[in-house]
Image 1 (cartoon, rainbow, N blue to C red):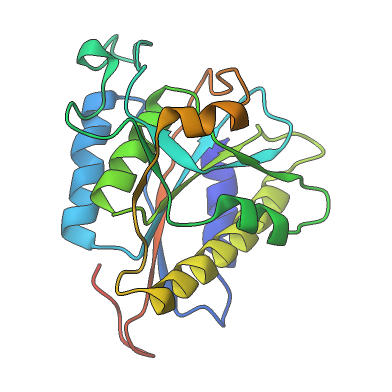
Image 2: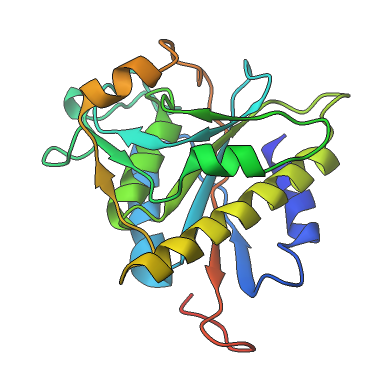
Length: 227
């Protein structure tokens, strides 16, 4: 179902007022493949923002994940593999928070018929692993969105529209950060104790269907940015 609503997003684009180039890429549920591809995305394409989208079959709302975790990856991927000792990057901080305020985005992203919520627990599976890597390589300029499966009350057209609004708000957040400092985003290592009370206390992402996408603001009107 991931492909269907991302096809809708591709048709919609990000609006005429947003000077962006939107590209969409499907990632497999494979730790090793994800690690290679995420690294290449940031090294070769140098996007302004990477937004990872995963389907959570138990979700009733869209969840915007604030941070990625470095450890706890014990569940095997589709090839029966999981990272050694369950760690993403051996020398990395326990948690990296996105430079995008997901709480602020969740409040502003209003789409009739869709609930958008804020989360600090992305689930310790390939989605969380992907997110942590992206936050690491992108200096915090990444986001992870968990969406519910498609249903009669949440068709692909509505979910595609919701993602359009959410990404527009995320790009506004990165633009604010750019004016506040020399970098577009800033990765923020966070101690686990700071997050414990905000966590949902459960792993919501029991199954992951990854379809990351990334958007890059044009450097000048009419000129394509570094992609």
